[in-house]
Image (tube, rainbow, N blue to C red; front, side, top):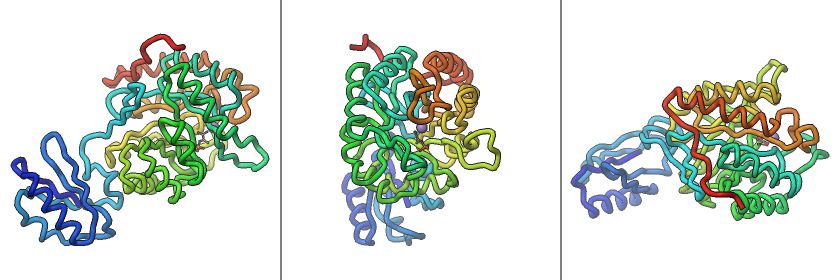
Length: 347
Ligand code: PEP
Ligand code: MN
């Protein structure tokens, strides 16, 4: 529920609303806005009797959020959430943000080579897994903390922000120490202790849609992070299980306009995991931007044939350059632009 205060509401009026909400046994979240302040009521699992609040001085209106996800919904916050990273990248505004990099961090040479190449091509965020969720326990599981340190080195040299996955609640804090954005992978979308823990770091979280998750389940998972007081969540459509085996997954691009209608959170697309096939990545990247994606996360490797994970879907660097050129044109056609490349000369 949302208590909207009038233009002339005083600080004391707002404090009284907070107090009454707390006395009712719920949590109050004051949200000062450009036009006026609203006070969110959280902690309820059903309709709340609002009569007591409606009659308080300064209260303009009480809005009952009808969706099961509350803080994630557009009813809660009509204007889009924009997440500002330290390197100047803004996620969720009019810019279309490019995140790119290998599936896994494999070595210093690999990550530094690709980071410089991606930065030159116009990406502003570097992806790379240090803790990898692999289908087989015998597959490469990632370099762990050493991988995080290599990502930090790449950031230092290039200025690219880092997005990398946290696989377990126990390693969230170490990932948060190095990452600009904590990735929660598809397999962990409903790992609620992990979501809570990532939420508590206060760092932006990239939440990928589960392999067989509905959009509603994705939004409810995001709600776990917002419920911890962390509103910096980026959703990601990365393909869901289908019955056709021509592609690894079915990239559900409808999710993009559907999420934009239901939620103020940004949503990006992952055409790499969405297709699993290198030659299908550029066409689906174009389509995702046309559908309104706020960004793309793309796997790119300096030598995909020898990648330790997901080589078949990893682009060659020159293909990424081609992708950037093509999606720039699509973004312009719908009144958007690619996030401006980082300024200055890399170290
Ligand atoms: C990845 O980004 O490399 C990854 C494992 O993605 P997902 O969780 O979408 O499978
Ligand atoms: Mn991968």
